[in-house]
Amino acid sequence: MRQNTTRRFALAAALTLAIGGVHAHDGKAHTGGIASTANKAVTADFDIVHTKISTDKNIATFHMAVSGKAGKSTPAATGKLAGSDVFSYVWPTTIDPYEVGFEKGAGILAMAVTAHPDFDDTPLYDENGDGKRDNDGNLWHSHWVVLKPNDACGPGALGVVDIPEGSKPRLPKTWPGFPILLDSPGWSPTLNAETVEVKVPFDDIGVVTAGSFDGVTAGLRVNASVHAPLLCVVDVFKVASGNLSLPGKPNQ
Image (tube, rainbow, N blue to C red; front, top):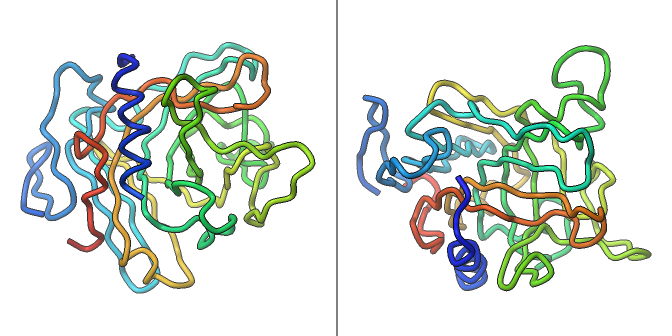
């Protein structure tokens, strides 16, 4: 699944610049959104074939389909936070981060469905139902993340925006306490066969319908020193549009 650095840097460049039809996957017809051709060179559970955002009243549904079984692969546990990996299904958008609780213009807002066995970043939720809220990061869960190019992650690479020590930026009420622009809102993703979906309520659904989006599957990694940059994109498995131009329009 590891992609070369050229692909990773192109992702950052395209995201910075970015701020139809009927098709089928797995024998099922899907309309609208971004259609992507299956690629045998990409691990099937991260091989995006369809990406879409649709709305119904104040609920936005973030949808992605892959050529294999969604969520089949999760990172190998290392037993420590430092240097640990995160696998993700990501919808980069043009929605301003302010709309979900961050500062205006803080970076590129993305919905992400992630899994990472070495740490838990949803302290308000007990996803595995065992009575503990700090031991289920290996189960797929949702986040809002704010991304920016960060050369400390590698020349031209992307990272989740760090919160400098001593600063007090505007943050969502469900911010999990990590020193990065990350929210753990508790919207439970549904992974069923080839699809990943998350339903997200908005106070103003117009911020969704007026925007645009893309789809990405990627691997991120926690800094080995557990210092800024804390969380970097290190592998891009696939980009739905092929060039991260954010061509998707909700409900189209």
